[in-house]
Image 1: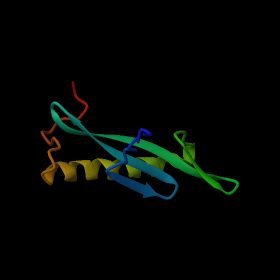
Image 2: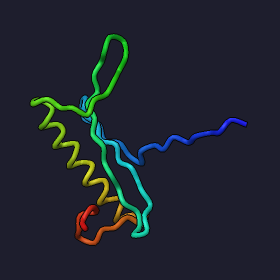
Image 3: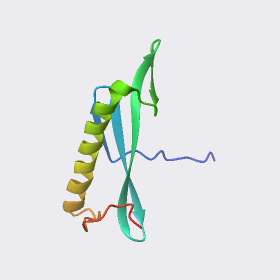
Image 4: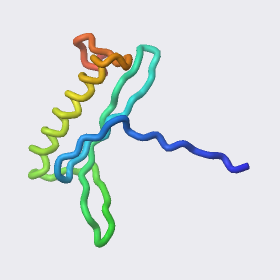
Length: 93
């Protein structure tokens, strides 16, 4: 029997123009934590692709997407899904 692999999907995405933030949920011993990956969409011929490289003109939009992702994570933390909202950054040591 073939082994099935389950592709993990982001719990939320924020997209503004061609800049996207994918928010990933990770269960840890300390509770639920979120990580964010950023990408820029572009078209190569007929195919849509993404890159993690951003040009000068992408940076203001990247900032807005990052702020929206941050707001979503803190909103999710307050909605009772187990995410930490203790006033510290989630990646604090």
